Amino acid sequence: MYLMALVGIGWLYVTVMMAVAEATSTTGTVLGAFVTLVFYGLLPLAIVLYLLNTPARRRAQRAARLMALPAADEATPAETSMAGPIAPDQSSHAAGDTVAPEREKP
Image (cartoon, rainbow, N blue to C red; front, side, top):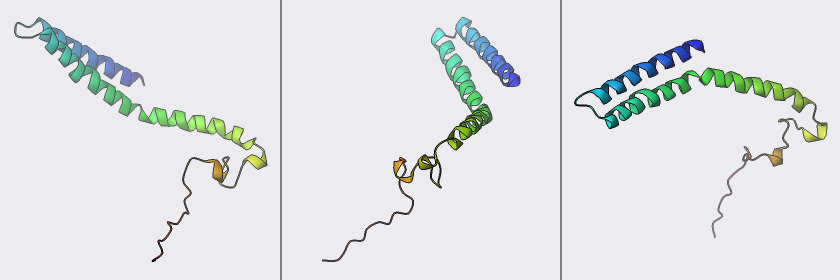
């Protein structure tokens, strides 16, 4: 966690310095500095940090699911079925064993 933050801060420092160099250069522009900062610094950093944070998000989802599990066990038997805490006809998913109707010849 701290290593990711350190890498992110270092990358932003480098890209800010590149943007400053672009803006203060005799051939550079402020628009070029802004484009450098956004497309070379902020956007790639956001993508990399999002991807590197995926395991932590999965752990948090798993922990939340495990915390909700005892609450599902306390439900009344009428509210649960063999498949889980949601009755088969009340889920938003299609049934898995449906058969497409066949057209009969006239």
